[in-house]
Amino acid sequence: MSDAHHEQDSLIRTPKQLVVTVTGFFLIIVIGIILLVTFVTTERLIGAGSNGQDVEAISARVRPVAEAGFTLVDANAPKVLQAGGGIYTAVCAACHDSGAAGAPKTGDAAGWKARIAQGYDVLTKHAIAGLGAMPPKGGNPDLDDIEVARAVAFMSNKSGANFKEQDTPAATAVVPESAPAAGPDIAVSPVAASLIASTSGPAGLDQVIGKKIYDAACIACHGAGIAGAPKLGDKAAWDARIKQGSEVLYAHAIKGFQGHTGVMPPKGGSTASDAEIKAAVDYMVAILK
Image (cartoon, rainbow, N blue to C red; front, side, top):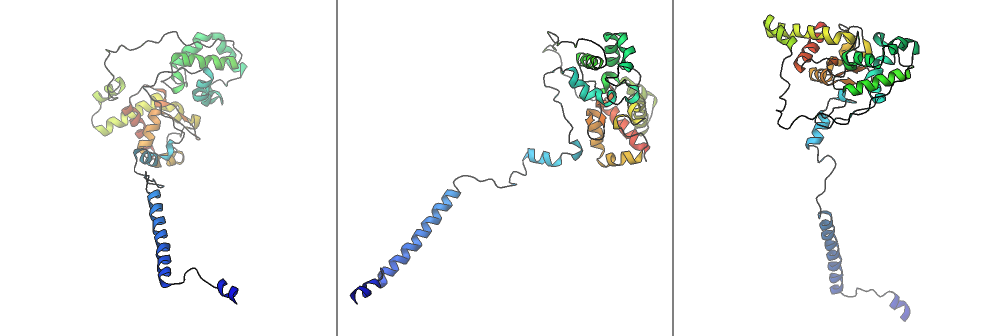
């Protein structure tokens, strides 16, 4: 009987002990909560989406989808001369892989034989200045003459020649520090200046300039649909592009564009001003209306 009685004894035998136990239990819980809150709020937390108003985040959201794959080049970066193979892939392959616009296909020894016989210097001169349907420097005026020469050697050697690719020059001319910095691109070329003198009204001037630039630089590709270029007047081919908006069309025409549907060299390979290129874009779009 005595052992059974002791087994049923509780640690809490009086009301005072019960109050102390309950109070201590709640005190432990409160202290635990305080410590947890202190631990969690010690450092500033950044939840998902909390940086949505940063400049970088906003720029990423408003960037046009059509610019995917479009590479912008820092004009202030040091000039790095590329090898012939790289230039060929980026600029020349669009025509010389398929033979578009009469371009001799790379690797076609018969098609290149007569050209190779003219000599490396003549081929390089034609590639830099342009010849027939081929625009100067393959449509990329930012290429250095040496880069063009290297691309010529690369193509020619793939097609039966044995030309030596030009080396990088030992020294590059540097503009003196006292030289004035170039101003913003607001100058009008001699072509536009002559048209301004003979045309009245801004709307009429834009149309005349646009057609003039189209005939000089754009027709080589947009007239025949070369390298994926939408043909002038082809509403079906232009519809998706027009939906991107004028600013996207202007940017691609001025800076160049390389995507799944084709290749567009900067300014169509011309030396026209930004304003003239925009006029040419407006002219081609207006034809569809």
